[in-house]
Image 1 (cartoon, rainbow, N blue to C red):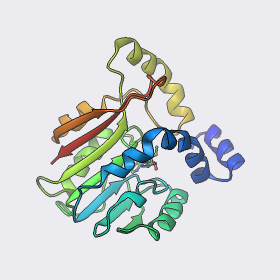
Image 2 (image 1 turned 45 degrees about the vertical axis):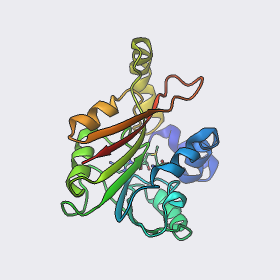
Image 3 (image 1 turned 120 degrees about the horizontal axis):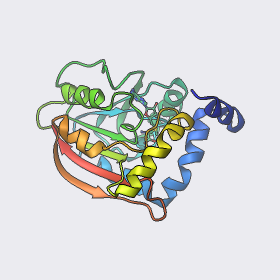
Image 4 (image 1 turned 180 degrees about the horizontal axis):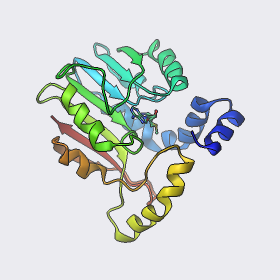
Length: 210
Ligand SMILES: C[S@@+](CC[C@H](N)C(=O)[O-])C[C@H]1O[C@@H](n2cnc3c(N)ncnc32)[C@H](O)[C@@H]1O
């Protein structure tokens, strides 16, 4: 954890509170509505990777059996409390996307939001995700990605070292949609969700299948 994050977390009463304060404007600007639609058509045993404080949990329909992994203990505590109020049955556990503690083909679907930017080896995280999903399983990704404009991408490249340090390993310049495809997922749909005035953070909702 960077010194800046440690200082800010202490000032705001912890990492989880800090994270939710930071994302609250985005949630109000439409992120919450996007979360609401992500899991609507998922069924069966679902894996959520990097669930953070559990901001997707309220949106899982009843009947789903969700396993959520999260490496930060304080986030897990918040998420586990949210899980008790969810309609779906949700279990929160420790885990690393790059070495998932599950057997091959053990899930019917997966969801992850704003996570691929932070996994140290993004491709390894995606290959692991594919391994634990059954053939044909649907996956929903919502991620901020590399700009498609040359100037925007150059700005992202220039700022990325500082951003990654300040934001605890988050990268703003990853070509995530391409990496999803290169890791063998069949992309069915890519929705553009660029926020006005925030062209350094192009957002994509990707519907894919194993
Ligand atoms: C920006 S937060 C997003 C949290 C949550 N998914 C959301 O939408 O609010 C990034 C999350 O990815 C998690 N993360 C980072 N590296 C990870 C890894 N290697 N395996 C699993 N989760 C990871 C972080 O702990 C953090 O909770």
